[in-house]
Image (cartoon, rainbow, N blue to C red; front, side):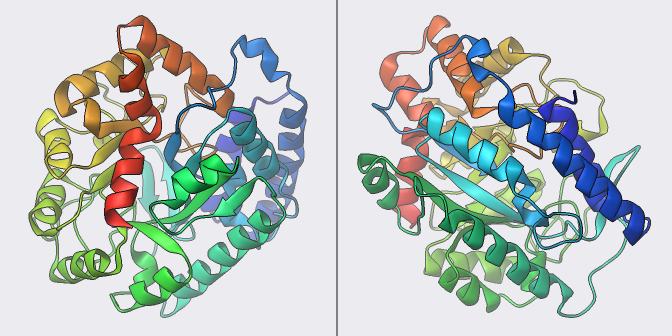
Length: 374
């Protein structure tokens, strides 16, 4: 039987490598069918209890069931979506940023990592945005224990009602198609966070995995930051270069986040370009923001992920670290289920973090930023 991780990796690879429509359709249907088997895994074998319902917990970045592919040929069921949301509920996760993927149609995986292979044509990106956000809202409608959230105070309010808050975010600014005015429409649609860049250069600023074009933030990017501040949207600097992050920190009147990364650890894997330096982490912290610890395969194990979390806390401070799982679209994740989060929490406790510090890292820090920005 394929593991959840392998199925997820396979779906991602096939979704973004466009050789021909027939093979893509056949593969995706097979992958979705295989993923159904993961629903019957006995997660109690993990030997952990779910998170305590007594404090907030939040995931700064996730793609449950690869929902962003719904509506494309071959994606005919939402088994993975239902499975992951079920684990969120069982694990008492209070909320998460459910992330659309702005450049999913124009990137592919190769020996050097994820790379763009073409540009969008006019109106193509915006049309794909409408498909993705429509799919997510449709899929959430039938999940009684989940509710769309748009205000900062919604996280605590919904938590008190026993519901999980689904905030909508967007990975990459390609959907804007160079028009910062589209932010108003996205805001009206319920989007509350925008990650400026992903893997395809989009005219807003420089990204970590491509050569720099602007030495940081572009003029269009500056306009986007100002409009996001005015609207009350969370600015996400994941995938952006240090120079871009510094430029945004210098402009933004609100705290900024870096939803999923970790400190550089000497890895030579192509994806290690996505990691950040000590100074990079401090820039986010100095705005009052939060960095989501990323349980990717650049960690050797859960224990290594715990140690790397502590290293980030030492650098950025206990008030500026959270969790960003990249769930269901991560690279060889050491956490591939929300039912493993207690293992992370237990590990941090065993290393000496106090109860109130655990509460901050699990969700309290993010709640503070949401209430400040939204």
